[in-house]
Image (spheres, helix red, strand yellow):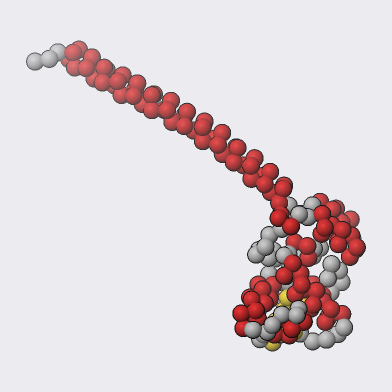
Length: 183
C-alpha cells in the first residue's frame, strides 16, 4: 500500500505537469494574440488610408461650408468635381441624400438624371418617365435602356434624391429641389 506522502507527491507532480502545460499553452496563445493584434492594427491603418484615397477631395471643404452655414456655389462645385479622380468615385452606390451633399458623389449616370429633372423643375415642368428620360438623353427607348434608367431612378428615390409622385414618373425630391438643392 502506498504511503500518504507518496500519494501526495504523485498528485503534486501531476499538478506541476498540468501547470507547465497550461503555461506553455498560455504563452502560445499570448504569442498568437500579439500577432493577431498587429495584423488588426495594420488592417485598420490600411482601411483608413484607402478611405482617405477614395474620399472626395472636396469633403473637407463641404464640411467647412456646412459649419459656416453656406453651401458651395455651382462654380465651386464644378471645380471640386473635377478634382475627384474618376477611379475614386463609386459607380453603383448611391448615398442617402442629406443637406449639403454634392451631386459629385454620384456617378455620371445619376448626375445626368438629376440634371434633367432639375432642368424640368427650374422650368416648372412636371415629372419625367424613364422613356422620356431615355429620349432626352438621346438613347433608343428600348426596354433594356428604359429599365436601366428605371432602376437608377428607383435607387435615387429610395435614397431620398428623387420623388415618385405617380408610379413611373420621377421628379426631384422636395428637399433636393428646395433652397440649396441642385448643387
